[in-house]
Length: 213
Image 1 (cartoon, rainbow, N blue to C red):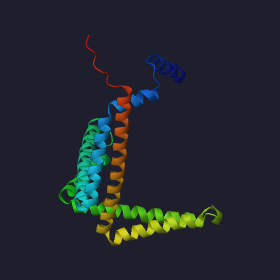
Image 2: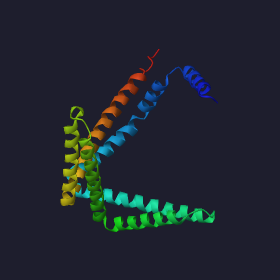
Image 3: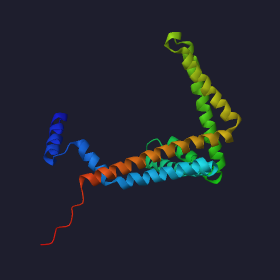
């Protein structure tokens, strides 16, 4: 079926239902406002924990990361076994799966090490991007914002050096940032949920009971 034909079919279905796709989506979200509210509450809860008890939040993130590595490692080993049965290349798949499985076990038994590893990886990223931004700034004309690009590179380098020098403090700061984001995100979802509920109530008002004859 061509794109024009599929578009005509979608338009005909939309016309027959008497609502545009945007209206249909709005109605669906309004009927399920409670699910969005639950997501908002969960985000708010996690954000408050991250802000008030950053150590517990860091360990929780490390355990979640460990679970992901364990699952990914198992799936990688299964993929390697299936590839071996079909006489395909399986060595790299098996090596990757075993490595992820071992890293997952280490992160599960030593979650603090997983947190430090994440912080150091973030530091390496900040140093690398900062260096690249500085190198690009020297090739940029002054009129095109060379100073601002250089400033961004310097800030990124400073952030990476700070993380390397004080990884635990960097982990706490990252957790606070994540907590602030989660609180703002959860609040936005809650506002959205209650607005959707209001629209749902307006679209389907409660009818008064019939008067007695």
